[in-house]
Length: 416
Image 1 (cartoon, one colour):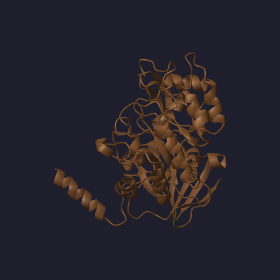
Image 2 (cartoon, rainbow, N blue to C red):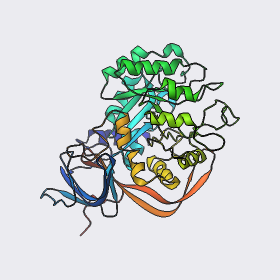
Image 3 (cartoon, helix red, strand yellow):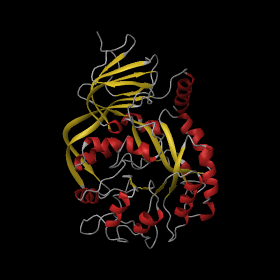
Image 4 (cartoon, rainbow, N blue to C red):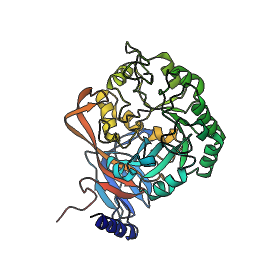
């Protein structure tokens, strides 16, 4: 059986011009008709047509007549958005973690761009690039771990943290590396965070993403956000933690952005106002619905919809980016804001503003979404559940003008 699967894989690899999620003989011109376009960068939130030619957005307008060579896709009743960007995932199966290859889970949920958050470090990034980035249909960027070996069980090894070597790797791979990552560090000092920020400066001002709160006893979240971080740096797992720092539920001391009375801590609001980015980072155990509800009740919303997609989260409460977005719809965010957090905002955060929008001439990464009405449950790490009546579903994903996922065959002519 294994030999058969191997041979099938080799055959697929040998098919010219055919990659995962793509079909043969795709047209160079596509016209998406009658969909409700939500493009936060361009302040579009209405029914429009979208024309694509040669992998680029050709036009967005009220009425576009199809060209003779256009494939017309009927998007009535659907939302048309820029290709989704998941700015927090793990796709490098380093040290036996078994993290998924991006294409397995991204394209079917409308994600055309995914950012790996520290799975590789300055020592292992070349392997990640060769094995995953260069082989994926999904566009894959990386936050480089300040630890040379990345997520390999030695995140406590300060001797393996090198700001100069990390920055050098980022400068060598400017097209792939968008920042630096710190995670899982348990000692009560700032060595990895200071190192990552130094690397960011050496690499021309790249941002740092921090998974914070493993120190025993806890380090100060206020100091991280208001003194260590620069505008544009990213605090992920924003609705994780505990209101009572160091409680038995969280012995590492990850601190919530709300207090025990449910009020948003003033330093968190100040940090967001000064440009600190708060990422959902749902993950397998890093999201608490109650904290999210309390924070949003007081006007504190996440900036980006990062999933923390990893080997144990995609079959849990998190599932995929559409489930994360649907959770926040249920909690009270409006649809344009949720879509902005998965398109234009992450594009800005990772300094790739050529992505995340449908401007004329932009790369034609496009997602068609529908909202299914029904009775749905959304839950968190504590199995606390909220009920909702709407869930986002991906109908079609287009990557650089090519259909890479089609849930119901809407890009294929109906049988005569």
